[in-house]
Length: 335
Image (tube, rainbow, N blue to C red; front, side, top):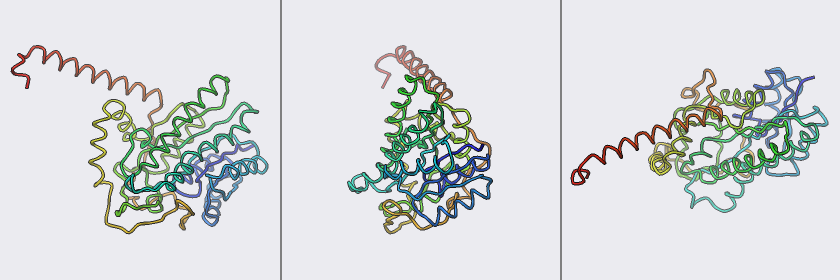
């Protein structure tokens, strides 16, 4: 019997890429999003990709009642949920002091609380069976926040706190349910053209820009061979390492990137924060010529720890050498 996966935000971008990858692997796929027409387009794509059954559910991921109802419907119509991917998100591109309280609340609800609600819904069915995989789609911006995206960065950081706390509880319960977080780099999806933007400039995602299908491969890997964390792309690894080892330097570098992340002047855009944005069920964004495809390269949690240890050891060695060198220089010459 085919296994069943639920993907929130599964009608476009990374979510649709993930759903399509699992469809090609023979999974039954349930996708949850708001825009009915786009859901139906995505359903046709997933059926064509090989999914034995597809269930499209129109629901707001910030509505816990709707998410609980979606999970119950999946169990009734497709059978036991074997995997659940929390992918839905929203953002506001603007200076932090120009983002209003209602926007902070909405981004928090769709980007952080949606992952809480989805995880709890999945656990209700997985815990009695003693198995299942839950995957949180996060961002390198949870590790090294970027300017002009304070609400989004904070919400993604909250996902890490929730997930780490829950993981410890599952370990204490000796549960076989896996819980993984995937930290992503800049990815070429339609999202930058749909997001609320009140910065006065078009949003430009920095290089290197990655193909959404690489993120889908990471999600499949997290279900097949779960680990605590996956970092996708070298840029994600570098962001986390620099933030861990030299945060003040990372702050200054981020400040320098504001102009690079801002394109041509543009009027404010309401985007998809409060209501669905009209657009096709597309995986790719407008920058396909920049997006990097190819073989997936991920840094697992074990590799991440080794990278940090190696970098820290290198810094300690440099520091010791510098201190030793200074100790040998007469004080009057050190300045």
